[in-house]
Length: 453
Ligand code: SF4
Image 1 (cartoon, protein in one colour):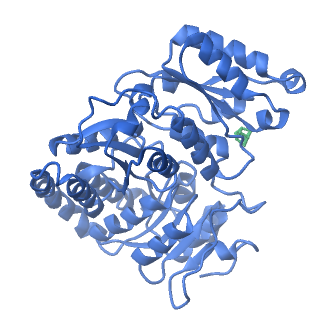
Image 2 (cartoon, rainbow, N blue to C red):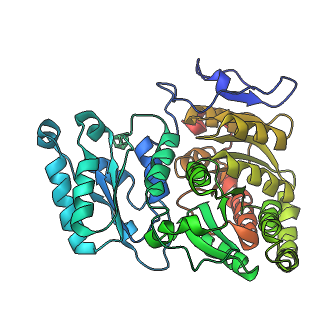
Image 3 (cartoon, rainbow, N blue to C red):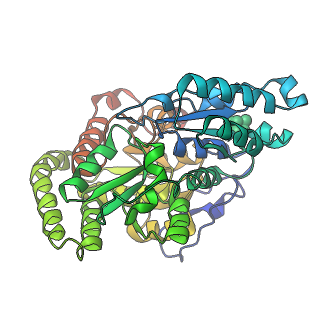
C-alpha cells in the first residue's frame, strides 16, 4: 500500500497480509480529511424516513431538510407522506429568540393538514445550540391531537452518523410496546434494517410468507406507525445492516425479551442462510418449515444459476472495491463477487465497528485493503493502486469512479434496481456486467494521474 495518506488516518486502514489485524474505528472523522460520512441528523433521517404514514418535521434551517429530502428510494405500498420534507426553516430571529413557537405552529398546521399517525421532530445543530425544549412542545402537540409526537435528538455535531442511528432507534423505541399484540402468530418476525429500496422488502416478505412466517413490522422500509406499536408481539427480530437498527433490537431484547437473528439478504449464500436460520428458529412450532425453506431455495437457485453463468464468463478475474454505509453489507458483497469469479481488493464502511471489521478481515483475501471512514483522496489512491474495475458505493462515490474510468454500482439509498434476494443477485450480476464491460471505458483514460482531479 502506498503511504501517501493523511497523518492521523493510518490507523483506520489495514492491508490484509502478514501483520496482525488492527484497525481504529467508531470515532469522529479526522478534521480536514473530507469524510464521505453524513452527520448525526442525516443518520437518524435515513433510518426513520421510510415510515410512510408519519410526519417528518425537521426543526432547523432549511438546508438540513433539503439535504435529506426524499433521501432514500424507499418505496411505500400505501401512504406517501414520508416523501414530503417539512422544515421549520429557522432564521436569524428564531436563533436569537428561540424556535419553540415556530415549531408548535408548524406541528399544528401539518398535523391538521395531513392527519399523520405519528410525528417525528428532528433536532438539528442549531437547535442543540439554542436549546429549544422539543420534549415540551412535542408533549403539548401529542396531547392536543392524540397521536405520538416524538423528538429525535439528532443534533448534527454530537457524534458521527452512527449516533444518528441510535437517536432514531430511541425514537422508535417510544412507539414499540404501545399496542395490542393478541392476534399475532407465534411464527412471526419483524424485519429490521431493510429500507425497501426498489421494493426489496416485498421480495423478502414474499419469501417469508411462502415459508409460513407472519411479518409483523417492517422497520423501517414501507413502515407503518401501527405496526411499530405492536412490533413487540413478534417472536424474533431479523436484523440486517449492522449499524442502523441494532440498537432498537437490543432495546427490544432488554425490555420484551425479543431475540435477534442477524441476517443479510444480499448474495446467494447469505440469502439462503437467512431463510435457513429463520426456519431453524421456528422448527419446534412448525416442523414443516425447514422443508419449505429448502424447497424455496432450491426453486430460486434453479432459476438463478444459469443466468449467473453467462456473466461469470466475462467477469472472471476482474477486481472490485466496496465502500458502504454499514460494514455488514460488505461481508455479503465479498461473497457475491466471489460467486461471479471476481476479487474484492478494497472494502470499507462509514460506520463499521471493531467486530464488523474483524469479520470483514476474515472473509477477504490476502492483500485486500480494509478501511474505516475513508475520503475521496484515499479512494482514488486505492482504486489506482489495486487496479479496480468496479467501485460499489453510494451517490458520493459515483463521480470518483467515473472520473477514474472505472465502472460503478450504486448499492446505497438511491438505487432503482432491487439487489436483495435471489432475484436481486441476478440484477446485481447484470448491473456489474453492464458497467464493467461497458465499451465506454475504451474512450476514458483509466488510472492516469490527472483523471481523479
Ligand atoms: S451538520 Fe448540522 S447543519 Fe449540517 S445538515 Fe447536519 S444537522 Fe444540519
